Length: 413
Ligand SMILES: *Cc1c(COP(=O)(O)O)cnc(C)c1O
Image 1 (cartoon, rainbow, N blue to C red):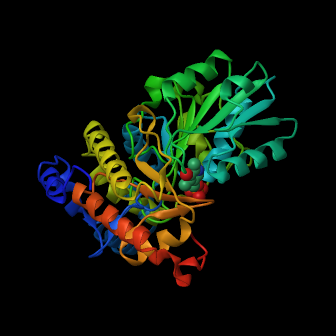
Image 2 (tube, rainbow, N blue to C red; image 1 turned 120 degrees about the horizontal axis):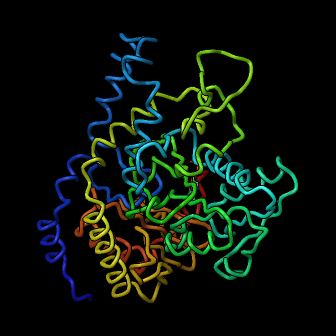
């Protein structure tokens, strides 16, 4: 048995400076939710805010709400609030579209900012939509070559040269939880004369990020994962001030136009970050993010990081002590390179995760062979970690996961 006891975990919860945030989220009885990195939990205030936006702003305000309720400015006002969570000063982030679409816009804009260079670099191991969008962008533009790095090589230094225009990397790997040193990698890319695009899908709301301080050029990310914006909540895109006037993105819709209500036939980009907008924002989805940002505006990200590392350390320690012979921890032990998740490799992984979910411990399976557990410090406590490992131990040592019903694959894993 491990040195730490459940009573120790309860005591740590009682002393946790972030503990009061838990009551700001709705979580079902009997569930330990370790999947806030795929779909963040529902904030308690969200339903009432959505109700207000629907019945008052839409129902009563009607089209007047585009002005009166600030609808037209939401991509920018919410963008600045998300910016505060990722080290971006005002006027550099807009909330809009999906992460996939923002990757496309950011990539093509970055390539345009480095004329004469014809290579983009991506990561073979990243969440595939990033690669798919890169393939789409190269296909549409023509004349570009893609180079992919990977954990098995080649490394960035092997493929970075004077032909490279842009590098797109996900800061925290969705499978392993391994985290890049943003400042060091950005400097390495700049030394080769290329631009750096960061995907913050598993960083925003998970780890402190300092885009401005690291000299990042462009970035994208999700609001429905750690930021609790709700299923399909809009994504965000960051473009550093110094690039905005020269940047042009390919999806030249009217919300990115300099004068959208002049209805002129020719596209003319808006000044600043606004040119990264495309079409009419889905306001009901923005309302979900707006509600969760009421919580996130009050979060001390240094405290969040401290607790995140303590939770993941505890999980790793308990897993190794209790089921170390059944699983391999693939997430780095080194705090400097760990995001806010822990992934375990098991001979099956899919069926054990189904058995865990049936017992109220919700994580996810990531092909080909990982169980992934996300740790969200605002609503996950130390005793939750203890209890989750207790259930994992039962599932693995009893081998109940071998029952055939756990092997049935669902559409969404
Ligand atoms: C979750 C995730 C996405 C999601 O993209 P959508 O367009 O929102 O579906 C993109 N990139 C990475 C790295 C992710 O982890």
